[in-house]
Image (cartoon, rainbow, N blue to C red):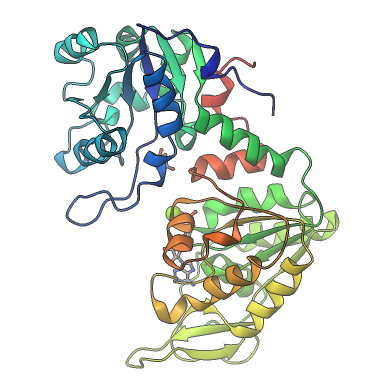
Length: 393
Ligand code: ADP
Ligand code: 3PG
Ligand code: MG
């Protein structure tokens, strides 16, 4: 993908710079920031703007409040964490685009920061309402897009404002585009995709786009169940997403035609009610009375053999219910093996990045994207509306 016009090109001294960030971070049950990777990765852009004398106004969403105020989705805990990193208090404008926000923006001095409250409290945000986009744009004189994780959404704060203000890419966006492009433009072969996770229907477009581009696709997690089911495997009491048989069969045929090898689990670990330990079973033999939760040891070895031959790896989706230590071994062992393989390895996905970090295996990756859905679309070669509106360099 072409390089985007960089924030380093923008003249920002003394000007109000609206910065879209993706601070949609996981929260603990008590409402504190559970993982601040997305906050930390915006600091290069924010510190650059501070040093350059900009008056920075931050915009983000948190969760999906659907156009209504929800105190549980306030950006207050996020702004608290951010203030710590910037070493100065960042005020939060509760009314988003109201008079208080306008006044606070007008009062900013060079190098100051202001954050707007959750932009999805406003119905005009997701609707990309022209009136709301104009109100947001009125707060700034320059727009910097640094919310890579939201660039697949055509919303007021990603696309609407970019059409109304001179727009530049922040460092996080530049970095994501540069690294993820290496998977799209000319990946070094063998290129292997390691995929898992839960929602199969969501991942089918990704699988389809990789047929013919990747040399091998290794499928674990609940993602594998519809494939095994379509092949007639007994999965015991495991729930399998229904109605996917045709699509799954079509994908397998397309991959075969394109010369992409698809590797499915050959053994699984089951959770059986009333039993503490996982039960092991080969795929193809009768399943125990329980639900499949992880790939088995033979499958781990099988996946590793293909990964060991690779030069490029893309990983999304845990290979089992990795939040439960009994079913984390598949993900942990395969990624620990991957860490010993030279090459360019990328991880993407909200749950995946968190789980890799919890399992202590982020060292398997040269790059961990801050994007979930946005990264998956980018890797498929889909044009993201939030990137398309940034002029090329
Ligand atoms: P990401 O957000 O990284 O794209 P997904 O949302 O697709 O990942 O999937 C993450 C979830 O899938 C995790 O919570 C994980 O526990 C779950 N998962 C993966 N395999 C299984 C399985 N066999 N049974 C139950 N849950 C699973
Ligand atoms: C994400 O976490 O993937 C982004 O922040 C986008 O959130 P959304 O899926 O609610 O639009
Ligand atoms: Mg997820």
